Length: 314
Image (cartoon, rainbow, N blue to C red; front, side, top):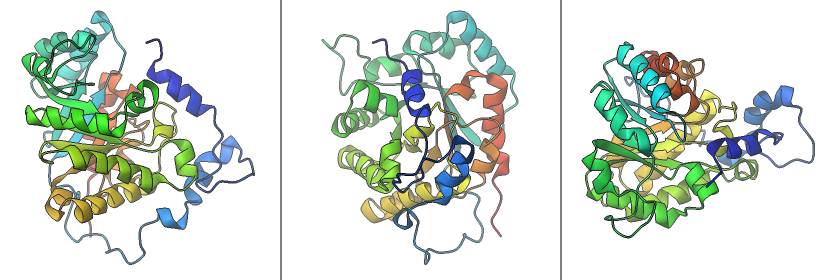
C-alpha cells in the first residue's frame, strides 16, 4: 500500500486548531498551542475533588519507566546499521525498559547487532497462528526471531489501514497468549478532541482491549493523540497528564485497582529530546512511544534518559 505514516501527519498538519470546543472562529497558527490547551471543555477535566499529588512517588505506574522507538516504514540496511551503532554506544540510564520496533525486513539484522540492553519489538502481528494469510506475520514467527513486544492499535493501523477495535483486541489477546508483550495504543482524532470526545474515544478503545485480554500482565498502554503524531504538535505536559490520569482511573473502575496501579501508561505524539523531560515529570506519564526522534540515536538516548526528570513529589 502506497500510503505512509507521513500522509496522515500531513493531512492533520494542514488543519487549523480551534481549541477543544467547536467554534466558528478561526484561530491563527501563532496562538494554536496556547489556545488549544487553554480552552479545554470542563467535562474533559478531572474532578476538582481528585486527590492531591501523592506524597512519595516518582510515577504512578509501579513498573519501570518504559520507552519504545517505533521506526515505522523507515530505514535501509545502511541507515539502520548506523542507528544501531549509535544506540550501542549511547549511555543509557539503567532504570528504563527500552524497546525498538524496526520494519519487519530488518528485525533480524537489528536483533543480531543491537545491544541486549534494548529489546526488540514488532510493529504488528496477525490475530492467531500462521497459515494461509498472505502478507501477515504470526506471533510465533516474531518469537522465533527474538521479538519480545508488539505494537498494536497504532493510529496508522486504525485510520489508514482500517483496523477496528475488535480486530485489534483479538491481536492483543493472541500475542499475550504466546507470551509476547503488547504496547496497546489508544488516542483520539482532532475532530474528536474538538468535539469534547477525548475520554469517550480512549475509554471505548480501552474497553475493546479489556474485553479481549486474558490478563493485563505484560501490557503497556500508549496514549497517542492522533493530531500530535508526526505533526510537531504535542500535548502540553498538563494535558497529557490529565488524560493519563483518566485512563488510570478507568482501569481502576473497570478492571481492577491492582491493574491500574501496575500498568504503565506512556505518551506518544511528537515526543523529542526537547520536550521529553517536561513530560516525564508528570506522575502518570510512565514513559514514551517515540516515532521520528527514535530514528536519531543521540536524541532517542536523550528521551530514554529523561527518566532522571522524575522527581519525588513533595
